[in-house]
Length: 379
Image 1 (cartoon, one colour):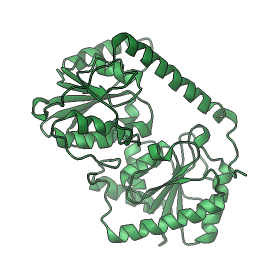
Image 2 (cartoon, helix red, strand yellow; image 1 turned 180 degrees about the vertical axis):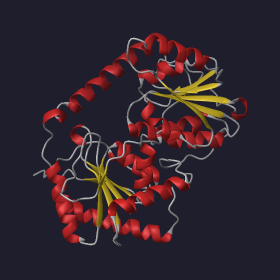
Image 3 (cartoon, helix red, strand yellow; image 1 turned 90 degrees about the vertical axis):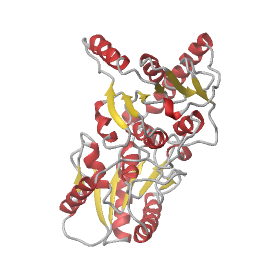
Image 4 (tube, helix red, strand yellow; image 1 turned 60 degrees about the horizontal axis):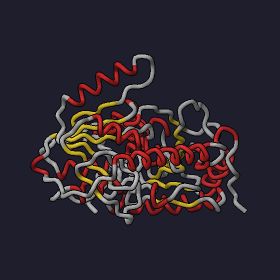
């Protein structure tokens, strides 16, 4: 019997709505592709000819924004002379790209309201004035990202050659099915789209400064108070069926404390939450993403369901344990050197707590034998 109860209330219909949106988006893209004709694959681009690039990813999910970071890492190494801009869907994620080599500016699509047409028109004129050499559309099935890449009016357009590709590309890459993780798929555009690509990078990447890391460690110490045991942070929320109920997390927490009394715990609270799972449990509510990442970077282990904070912690360099129920682990697993994606669909909270402690031991052994860094080596 499955120890995890099914979702209820506001989460019950989330997965159905998500599947319906994906199906409608795919149908629209296929219809437009039949009208425009799928682009042929073209010869690779010459890096020396490209000086201004824009990557278009209009999306409002934290994980999808972080999935761009390996692409940006590889792109900056392939085009060291180029200025790289991004076009994204929310100002909340602008700070994620601070300090990344090659990244010059992050443009944000305007929000709603009656002034939206004027703001959109102003942005369109500003984008076209940049005279981009290359626009990159890094997804397999995003209508809004393709539309954004089209509006930038770059000299060349690079994207994927798929049956539902309607964007008029000058350079198209046939997707390789061996690239299964959502963070690795976009890197194919660099590896196959340029004549002399830099190595691909395997993990998410957040460029935290040493000052940010010191501030995060100091804040963590202030939250926890005096103590010497290892520190595990956790985040209990997720969307739809990815979410585990509060009672599951309470049982997990109680078992952790029983098995390892010296363990120090920190709960990361989502927006709108004010109370931790158990009375007196140290907790943090931090809406600013870079400051949250700086705190998680100081943890010995971070535990969460498949969610944006899970990927943020992994990108910060924190050893991360991802708890998966319904999403594909090979597509959304955390990507650090000692990260683990654990299928908990048939595990009890007590079994998961014991697996957590085993993963903590692995993380502590790794930290004793290597330098803790968020940067990643090439594949």
